[in-house]
Image (cartoon, rainbow, N blue to C red):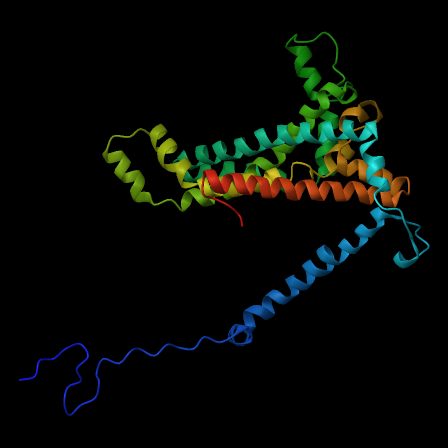
Length: 327
């Protein structure tokens, strides 16, 4: 009898060990046709981003021209890096950069850490009604306009019947009202505190959503092992939301330079301008108020380039240390 080997085909029959046929993968357009409805749904957003985020980048050419509004871009006089040299030689620029970085780091430390601990504390609450009530009350300020918030803060810190000064004087902590809004030394704390109060509840929602994704069996196993609630928070909850913390921290670092100007514009005044002016407000004052569009564009380009460098640097560091990244 003939011994069968792996290469032997049984007599009277065909090879039964046929290799499975591989499905030929379609190209890009084949995938588009298969998922055409998904692409159609995303098309308006792609157009929106292209029109309002990428097309305006053509305006960056103003930073390298002596821009005159009455002429087209092709008719402008090219001046190279003139306005960038002027920017780096301006002493006011470094004062504004100091203000921007100071308020950014203060906001990063408090505005990033507080929501994490607040989310963990809310997660530990057992009363569902009270938990939802606190969560709702805490994120409502996010929907309040900065114009309204600035008005409330200005009124509360006023020397003429302001609630804060009234309380301090009633507790005999001060003999006369403190001019909070007229002293630059207070301005950074006022802006940071108001920002934390306004955005903590909203940022907490993100961390609560991440916490709910942690496997409940991990908590049950830790309770069986006798772990306290503090140890559960430290060894289960925090590691469970590490990826969320990393992503949000990377994005926050990328916005260290771009902190907007609404808070500073609404809460600041001429008495505290050396502490309230930030890069975005600096660009607004020169670009629109003074009509120096080329100089204002140069400030904006510096802002964008530094933000991109910070974002990629933070992403690279986190990718090596925590293996978490956004790209």
